[in-house]
Image 1 (cartoon, rainbow, N blue to C red):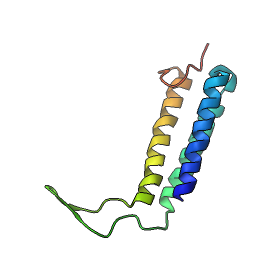
Image 2: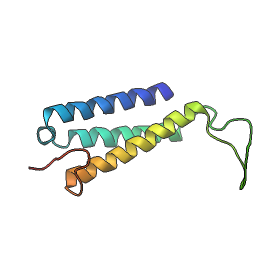
Image 3: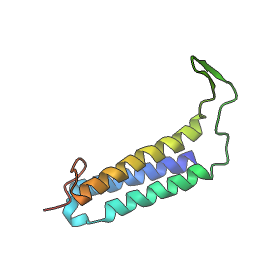
Image 4: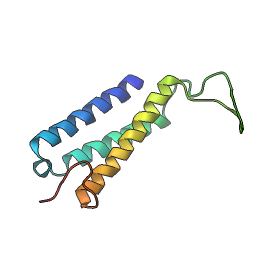
Length: 106
């Protein structure tokens, strides 16, 4: 699953560069749809992850003990978080609220 999450990241990055080079107004809602679909797929992958989610040892902190994520699960969760933020930024750009990623209008 971590390799699939990285592949999804590469695909969404490719769509971003395609949109950036061809003009956002010509692409329409396609990059937003791809990003939302990728985020939903990554959310389902995070829920359905069958591998070990936490490491075996406990880390001591001032607030107590905690068990950090394994590296593989952290790749999937990190990919989900980044793609979720980018989908939100695409939505802001598409709705005209903030054109931080692209300028989708006029």
